[in-house]
Image (cartoon, rainbow, N blue to C red; front, side, top):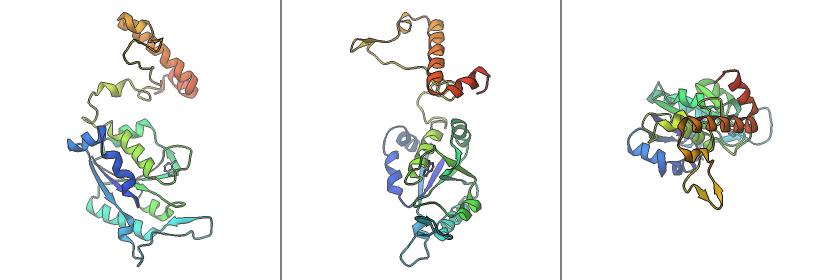
Length: 231
Ligand code: ADE
């Protein structure tokens, strides 16, 4: 998988790949990371990339020309690139999207800054448009990293232990049961006693009961789906 981050601020993104799981995935050639800065495509003599919005409104909008030309060059280089725009005005990104997008060969994340991206650029180039939640970030870079991280975990070989994908929250409609580390007794607090007895069928039932409990408390709408047999 190749990811291209289309951003005015590549240094905000770069650091995330300097360590841990995604660093190892890059070292194993499972992931490749590229950056494309719209500023490098600006026709303005000061390399300006923002402008006031046509029709008024507060703040500046990302100019169409630099971003349009950057994406045109990206498409010319790889016509199969899957272009994703990050904006709060979009469908929410969920685990099924992460799994589906993990099968692509090249994804470009387009991060907006200022008050937004010229809608015509989105209309022309977007394969998909995503929001990562109902709140407004200062730009799309964090959102693109969130998506990139969630997608990458679903690429074969990126996680050390592929088992860890199957029992997780959102792989079913239930949230995952709580996990415990050693020691069994810590600061006077014990792990559930059933975990210590080694009866795996009982541990499984207990984990399911705790999953249902957590889901009921934190995400009651998900529990409803579970009871209706919807994933
Ligand atoms: N840019 C600003 N806020 C965002 C959000 N919630 N999701 C995706 N991109 C964004």
